[in-house]
Length: 259
Image 1 (cartoon, rainbow, N blue to C red):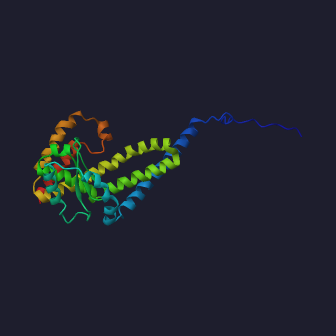
Image 2: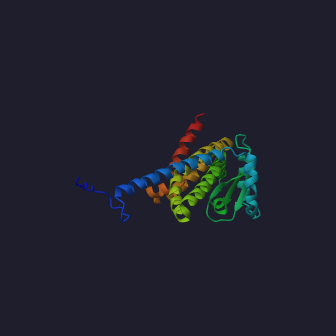
Image 3: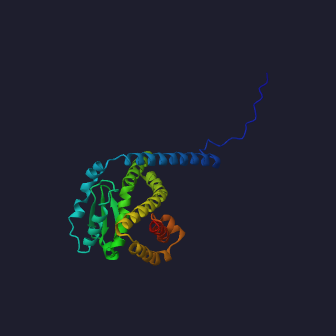
């Protein structure tokens, strides 16, 4: 019997380690899909844990972190912020955390919430925001982050994502992916900021009965900074654009004023 060899079909050249663009695209799609599933799973796990940490545990674990900042001598203008803060934390709707206001000698105007009930204000903020109702909104906004556990959830997401990605991809690959994840997390952060705005406005309004001080403050920010804004800056900014925040607060003021 005569042997007739079959005609060899055209195949990919694997002998030289070459890979077709279709195979590359397929592999890339698979990797991206796995990373997306992992990202959402990490987020759900972090949120699940953060929502179940008791206030007592949160206070004990993070309370000692303020010892260095607390030792700094605060200026006289810190007194108004402390008085306003003490008034706000008497609200019975707040989570029962050991709230404390901490002064930081930093010229950049800023305020932020720290786990365990801490709210930190800088010298720059005290120099910029001198109206009591405006201070009430700024401080109420940070208390809103505590109320919705944004600080705990953010820390949980950051730690889990960093540890797992660096373990799987190594430090270099993990850093690159973590940068992309940070951009994705901006959406979560903007959502958190809107929640904190809503809570802080309602808290300040309930205590002072008007909104003019903090609306004037936001109008000043809007006039000063929004004229230089661009769509890309809006995307990269963890806070919603100041003009949009001002519009939302005005709508909320009208709603509360009608009650």
